[in-house]
Length: 167
Image: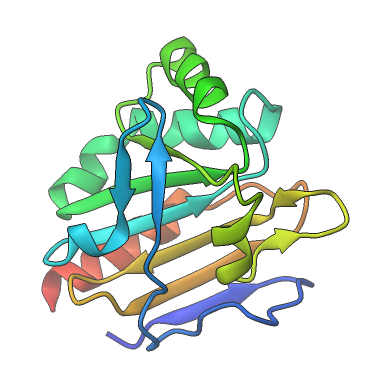
């Protein structure tokens, strides 16, 4: 697996590179339960940063993940979706949209994990659309940070997860 980064006109300062260990974090999910990245060692993890709950592009992207969750499950991959929203907003959002994966609140300190991953937009106070595919050993295998307004490419995630499954 060679891993790659795909970026279009986005500053990558501070973004973990392919081949680096993913920064560990603990955030509350939509139920207020702590979720720690390191607890998923032994499984692949897809960490999806998105700007805000209830926003148009974000909802479309997360619904696409929801509707294709079997792709992630068959790849032994856990999806962790991270925004700067509160756990209360994320609970309402998850219930409204029927999300069957963890929505994590990077609420306080505001955007701390997004900053650690280099995807916090200081000007707007939100996370940029960043995706990190992390292998079972905790190593970043794929990074993409999409420009504002550009949706993610789920087909690309499928390809990377299939490569990880092949070893």
